[in-house]
Length: 347
Ligand code: ASP
Image (cartoon, rainbow, N blue to C red; front, side, top):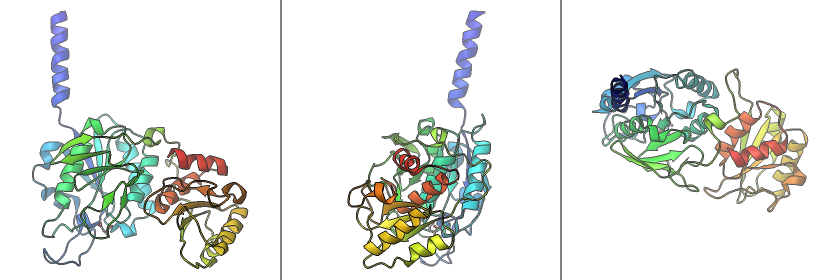
């Protein structure tokens, strides 16, 4: 009787070890789904190829996992919207917690991939792998990078070791975490970097090696809930530069922005006129976050500017585009400036 019971357990374990993972690919468009008239032509159209056609271009991908594809949108990511991001997040939250699915891959344009990755990092309610992937060359290009990127992304999504690390991005053999990654080159295949915190891991021809667990709150430990949300509060980014005009800041406030992120010079700084406009905005209840146009480094409170006195928030490690995502979600509910500042330290 006991022997039979243990034999039963053994075969169950063997079955679960050999079970082929189930991965869902949610396609949104981008260059990975782009097509040009020839293999060497620079001009192409993003979001022209469907998920089925993309999968057919990747030999062996179906050996990694049972794969299903769904088309969420088919846009260049310059046209990504909060509406599409909400649709994507809600679909993930609907299917990923269920027992059958092991991971999700999202194909996406690279231009705004960091924003969608960070948004999902804050609102997905599962610790299973969610992996973003794109390409720098269209599907028709000579040496297209999409097929191997997609192969590696599915391998990471199917790997239980990828669990609990938040939303990941896989491109050009590197595995990035959503908090730190950023696009650094307009055209190079090696465009994504994680300058402050380094890589979460690497993946070569489907074999992954994980180095790091991102230390910030994300997914299942995040307080943000978009289940009933249909619109995201407006937050504008204003770029600071030499002798800048304060008018864009006043204009943002006067046309309804609930928050402003300053892509400041240096440590989130701006000239006196912009500072006065930002102070006016803060006094009217618009949340002003100081981030930086500089590619790496943190923006700390009360260094050159007195944030306590001016009523500003410092973005810590988040670049302007990710600071905007966090602030937009923070503004879904009333929070004090101190609470919002705390979010910038924890997410
Ligand atoms: N414009 C494209 C996009 O973001 C670029 C790319 O995917 O690399 O959709």
